[in-house]
Length: 192
Ligand code: SF4
Image (cartoon, rainbow, N blue to C red; front, top):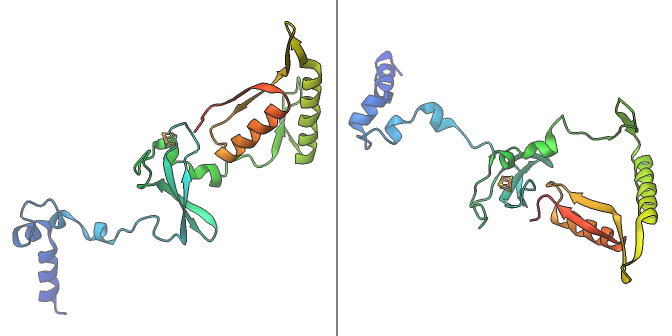
């Protein structure tokens, strides 16, 4: 290609020339689009597969598409097929990939003793035993068979308040467990 051909190609690529000579005289479409824009690809394009999910943060329950590459979550976008959100996510839902991938996530059990001023790591087994002991003690200490001669067989000493990142299946199991223990105060911040 000679210098003249190169100049001609550069000249013809100018937006104003494309606008005046091409099919986009108002410059609202292809004439205004740069080569850089033409070469952009969607950030989800490299994913191996897409899983459907529901945003766990609040009671709206927006649909999500979770893009996975090499079994790692690489992107989460709104699901256009969701009748609830029709492809939209609020800033929290848009940032929910961090729930899985953030380096700030706590991955160990952290414990601060009564009157302690520092957090310490606990083995999961130890923490589970401590929780179980306390639940059993609270239940025993607060168990009620009767209230004003009415049979209640309940405890007001244990309650459950779930967080928004619990999914439906986890909430189902929590409800079963706490009801079986006699608790009646069972709530979730984000009932979907
Ligand atoms: S947090 Fe935002 S994206 Fe998630 S369910 Fe609620 S409104 Fe939808």
